[in-house]
Image (tube, rainbow, N blue to C red; front, side):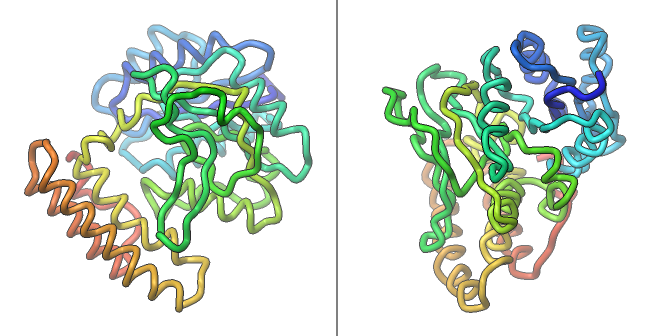
Length: 310
């Protein structure tokens, strides 16, 4: 379909069942024209074959290896541009959309020329009214990202549309014109914190990020990287990319502060979480944190294949 309102980009990496459920919700979307592009990041679970069998109309870009979240989405972005949509929706494969979600996001996005990106209200999939994201901010003092409403039950307290500082990459709709002018995601992050970096770039370009509570979806948190179980993959990239994301646009004084306070405190918290919470492979997970911390200090970017299969 040429000139749809939105191209929806879904990244898949050995997550066929999640992607299948996500696509079923996507194809139930109404009140907006859209095209779907799935980027398969070198999956080994026969995802491509299985998805094509169920969704004959689905466009899939097959990559030979896992290129990471940013590079995979950028591949989808380049393809999306060929359809000349007005917006692109970057969507995690472990999400379930309400039928009205993309249309309502699109309405929020197009209402103001200064708005470059829009994000929905996101619930946990296992608790239909428990909030995972209802807007976000960046706490420079604590060197952390804050998600409004996190783990709170929804009682309408986050139903007001508002400008936000941080837009999660879980479900993020961005005007195509902004991507054409300023470029896609920073691939040097590989995985995690590229959404914070994108949020900062959007705001630095003089544009706004808008939270649209009328648009809702459900997120099976951490399905890809087992984030809530503190998998080695998650721990390595979260630890490594944290300092870089918070320091790359700030003064040398803040970089020093972020290292001395934020990173060291974060490092200690992660170690304590691993030691005193349940879970297997504690030694491997500790090694992931130490490795991520060391690589952040020496400025390593991109993929680290050591943690690819963990």
